[in-house]
Image 1 (cartoon, rainbow over the protein chains, first blue to last red):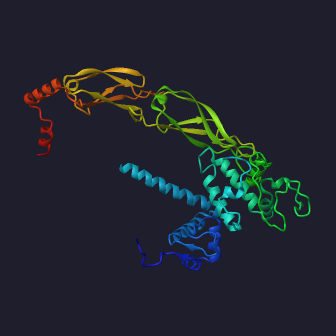
Image 2 (image 1 turned 90 degrees about the horizontal axis):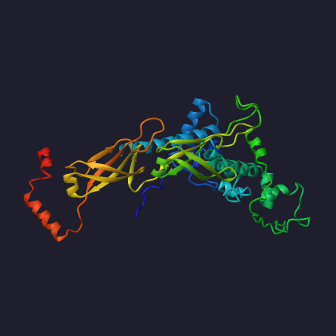
Image 3 (image 1 turned 45 degrees about the vertical axis):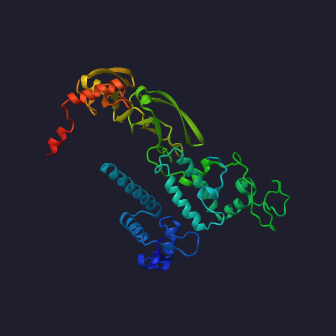
Length: 96
Length: 321
């Protein structure tokens, strides 16, 4: 059995918004658009894993840098995740 | 799987009490996953339409409320119909105002009067898109499915019927497999992919060949490797041995002094190549020893052990020294 000494790292909506430099309403909007994955769904209180901060940053970069809208950013995020997965599989296959 | 009257909440993977934001979130994620240009699966287009249809209904509070009350046949119920005052012509299955039980019974497939053309028109807009395909016509996406073949089928080619889940249930195709297809090769069925929008031409369906593992043949590109079991004396003295190839039995001359692992090439006996030289077949020698020795065999082996000066490990020790 493992007993964590610290609380598992979760950020509340307010903490997350502050860290991302966004208004909480904007974060909620990103969740509704399916761009961010909160840990708790359905409840009123959203909580996030810290890794989602990197996703927010990527969303912002794609929007500002390439002028993509949010629907397009969703597709790009999914495709980038899939490319990463395939490249990892390709590296594993080459090593073999 | 692809009944037209599916539960819209089920399509989006939601509970009946889902909030508007949750509906939007589920729709966005699923639409991205199943868009025919992102997902090559032949069933993806159908799924994408279902998702769009479900979102169309559930995202509008008015139509959602009516769907919750009347179920899949909600479009057949007039806009101003009030279940509480009218005697229900629908068998009394709808929730009453006092009971508030919003239960409906799924009437199964074939009840929907949805016009997909209509919905798609709304989804994609019916004008101003698409360059060279006429007014608003967008060609369909290409789809991809796997086609599993045995080594023998890939060698001989031929016709085959395959069934794929696609637009409007299962579709079956008669496919001509060219002789000598290899792993990963794509067979194109023109015009069998996703439907075009607004009169656009349909996309193509690509069948990607996957060669099934074979109990005898190992496949490498067009080359085949097959094991050639031999007795110790055959391997030592040389012999002519029959080998199974996809084209039938062939005779192989195994030279004297062949140890396990030696590969004998039969040029052009691998998988054929419609454009160029056929692959080769390699027979790999594998020396087998009788599991149980008869009295006479045992005696002969003992004699051989006495007489022989052969040390199979000598070469290995010299190299490492």
